[in-house]
Amino acid sequence: GVVAIRTIAFVDFDGTITMEDTFAGAMRLFVSPEDFAAYSKKLLAGEATLSQVVRRAYDGAPAALLPKFLDYVRSVPMRPGFDAFLDACEEKRIGVVVISGGARQFLDEKLTPYSERLLGIHAAKLKETDGILHLQSEFDDGNELVKKTAVMALYDYDYAIGIGDGLTDCNMALHAGRVFARDMLAKFLDKNGKNYTKFEEFYSVADAIRSSR
Image 1 (cartoon, rainbow, N blue to C red):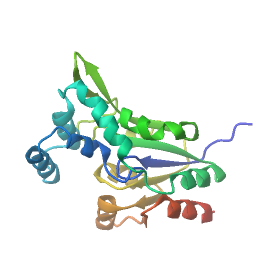
Image 2: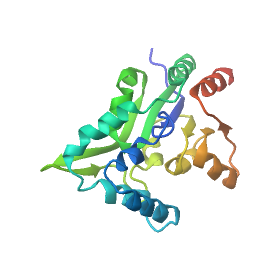
Image 3: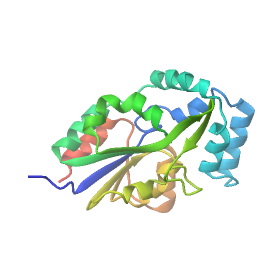
Image 4: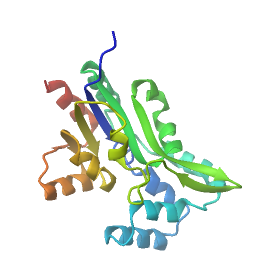
């Protein structure tokens, strides 16, 4: 019979599954360092939303850049232990859903070997029209390019595990029962008094999942 998936792990991609943020990294290939710094400053000061910043950068970029982006994405290492993490989830019958505020093409570049093992992959898409790129996302709420809690709501589960590292993972983490966090997300959770487990590699996440009842 069909086993209902009662627990789902929602996992961020950029900086979580990958060792660096490929979406920001790809921006550096075509946005000047001055503009990149200005975007970052606006974002941190709350003067622009993440959706606005990435759209300002990517919308209108020449489509000829896409192969360059993908070459770069191929060069970014995966965080160690992702296979072990998927093994642990399969043993515990935990579904794994990857949600990214980045570009689907970047995810496919890295996750195609794992696609059979994932319950879902959600991201924005870089669409090409007349040689120009623009970002398409069905979950853009004007604040986040991909609103992760809206994606979580598509799934039926009793318990959510959230795994992430950055600003786009904050709401997802607040909606999860158990959180594995690093970097900016960990700082955010410290501030908000939400418990989490710190991680650097997926091996420790796999161990924690195996040892939980």
